[in-house]
Amino acid sequence: MKQQLSSLNFADLLVGQRRVKQTFFSQIDKIIDWNPIRGIIEIAYTKGNKATGRPSYDSLVLFKIELLRTWYGLSDGEVEEQVNDRLSFSRFVGLGLEDVAPDSTTVCRFRNILVEADLYDMVLNEINRQLEQHGVIVKRGAIVDASITDSPRRPRGRKEYEIVEDRDEETGKLKSEKAMLKEKLKPNVDGEARWIKKMGRLHFGYKRHSVTDENGLVLAEETTAANESDIKHLETPLKKANLPEKTLVYADKGYDSAENKEILARMKLKSHIMHKGTRAHKITER
Image 1: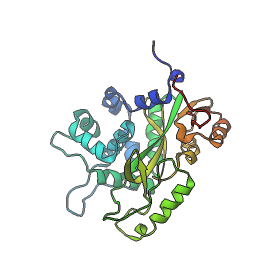
Image 2: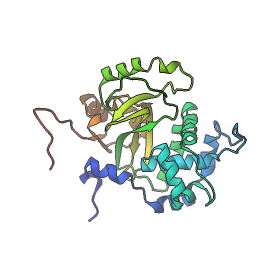
Image 3: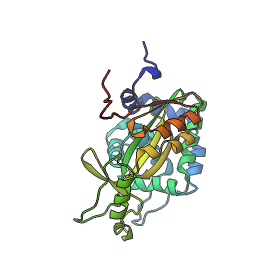
Image 4: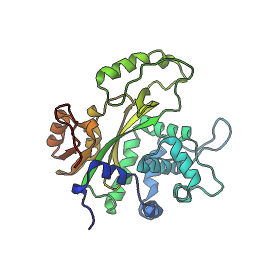
C-alpha cells in the first residue's frame, strides 16, 4: 500500500524530496513552455561574450542547472559535477556530449543576477504555475528545509574569525557580524555572505529556506546570510508558496517555536514541525 504523506515523518520526506524521478525531467520539455521563462530571465541576463572572449551560456541552460541544483539539494560545485557526469542531466539542460557544464562560479553568479533583479521568485512562480496546471504539483503537503550555499567570493588568507554555529540564536549572529566587519571592506569578498559551522565544517555563504512539495519540487524560497537562525525564517517562504488552507507543513526542530506555531495557525496551515527536546522531556524514537 502506498504510504500517505500524513503518515510519513520529516526524515522520510526529506530523503524522498531529494529523489526527483529521472522520468520527470526527461518529460518536462513536453510540459513546460520555456518561452515565458526565458523572457523573465532575460530581463536581467542576456547571452553575450565574457571578458575572455568566450561566449557565455544560454539563459535556459543556466536556469535548468539551477532547477537541478534545487530539486536534488546540490551545491553549485556538486551540480556542475553531476551535469558533466550524468547523461540524463546534461540532456535535460541542453548540453551535448562534447559540451562542458558551466563552472560553479557561473552558476552562482547567474542565480545572484536573478535574485538581485527580483526575478528569481518570478521565474520560479511561472514554472510552478505551469507544473501545477499540468497536475505535476499537488499541494497536499509542504516541507520547509534550510540548506547552505557557499559563496565563491570567500575571504582568503590565514585569519581568525568568530564562527556562529548552525541554529545559534541572535546573539551568535551578532558576534559573527562583528567578526566580518573588516572583511566587508575588501572588494573581492562577498559582503552579504557570512560564516557558519555546520556538522564540523566551515561554510561562507548563504542559507536557503525552501518550501517544497512531497516530490521535492520547490514552491518558494527565501535566501539569507548563512548565520541567520532558521527559527525566524518560516513565514516569508510560506507566504510566497501560497499554500491552500489545511496544508500539512513539515519542518525540522530548527523551526520549532510558539511564534511559528501561531504563524501556521494564522495562515490556517497544519503544523507538523518536529519538537525540540529538553532536559526534562527528551524526544524518543517510536
